[in-house]
Image 1: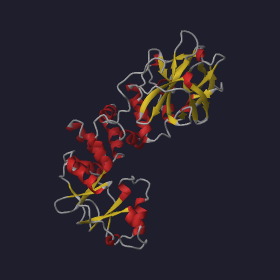
Image 2: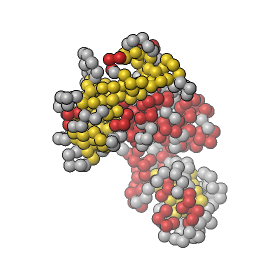
Image 3: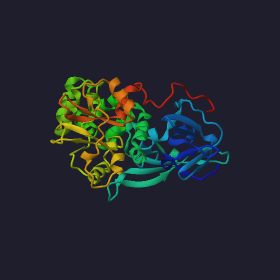
Image 4: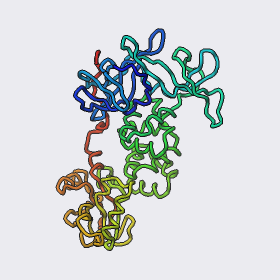
Length: 418
């Protein structure tokens, strides 16, 4: 294996390939082990494989580390990764840690760690990239320096928590699903630190991809104002599902702190049983008049903030065009729009074959309707045929799959030599 020095921050998200060139997964962390003397040695990598499982790749099975990719040899053990005594994860527990110089010259924060293989092909921590906290530069940040592991010790006695800033920077490009999995892989205390530092919208996206139990644990570690800001950035149906798990008094306090329009949608959804079409629906469908043209409809579904499931069709109603609307007329699928000239009015190409769901429809009835008509979204109406919202297929799957379906791990342990 090449002995090129590698900085671990560049390994986050790197693709891992097997000897045949097939991609196995992506790097999520580097695992090191402390020694009695000297710098820690690299034990291996945690790799996320399809199904969002974290497995362990022994460093001895790594044959090459190149920009953006890691090559491995042999068979990777697919059992759940668990830390052993004396091991520590670099991203989760070292990046951002406050240290102090043994010579008494001040404190610093670990921004990156270099690993390198020696003559015996053993990989270890060779260098730390640090930012001093003693003297501020013109830009308000301390000087950066390189150091050996032996030149610093943890500054835990300062009573200050580990900074999450650098870890968040390493995760900045991750898809929400991957970000959620990375946060869940952190120690409990570290999860809260990262959640506190993440922007509201980014945290909201990650929470929507987590199991409900972990969502609640993270939000319970934040104050009500921050929780309200995060829920403002979530889809109303997801926010309603979360608030339903809080005690009623705290739930009401959070609703009072939310944006009034967002809170109104959430309160509306909370009035329905969660296992009905009304409890499952989103209150923000794409609503148009019958005179809207194909060109205008396509422009609406092109907006980046519209999810693919929501963009699958538009709902045509009589005025008013805010939920609850005037009488529901029908839907137009995006494929239908693509088959007609741009100037065609949507009211003339309605798909009236699929009946809308009543808000009181049970989860089972909703699932059967989706299966019968092969759709990805269905309108929800009240007794007066006014449009209330739209149920998308992902909402149905979230409620029909086992509660722990988002858990990326098997309930097994890593074995020796994995």
